[in-house]
Length: 133
Image 1 (cartoon, one colour):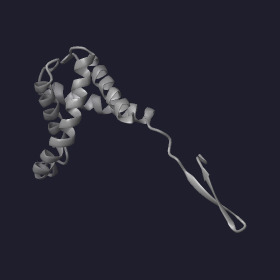
Image 2 (tube, rainbow, N blue to C red):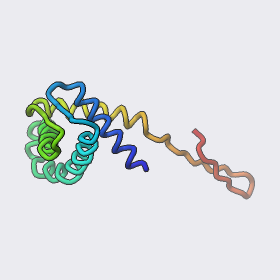
Image 3 (tube, rainbow, N blue to C red):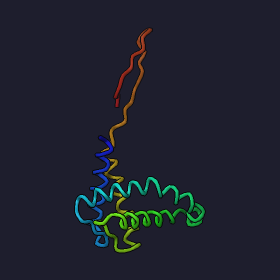
Image 4 (cartoon, helix red, strand yellow):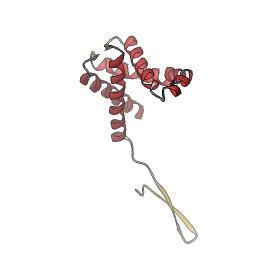
């Protein structure tokens, strides 16, 4: 269930970001859902491999090459998904930056609270208390 919620929130963030940026076009809700799935797969499978292969360049540029990798992942998703287009490389960089900000705030807003467990000793017995926050 949590997977579906995250997927829909990711699609919502993609839709909001595409609405804000004039260089990014999204053709409907279905395209947003497919884009969210493709970006998730690309970022989960291809990005780590490219990150390892370009690690010397990333170190040489003090981490700025990560922005280029993110833009390439967005452009790859735009090439795969028919209803998602990006006008160019710089729009892809801006899209990835704005999307990261939206996803951060959505993740903070929907993150479940931490569960804390405390053990209390009462004589010879030990009792467990939950959610003491």
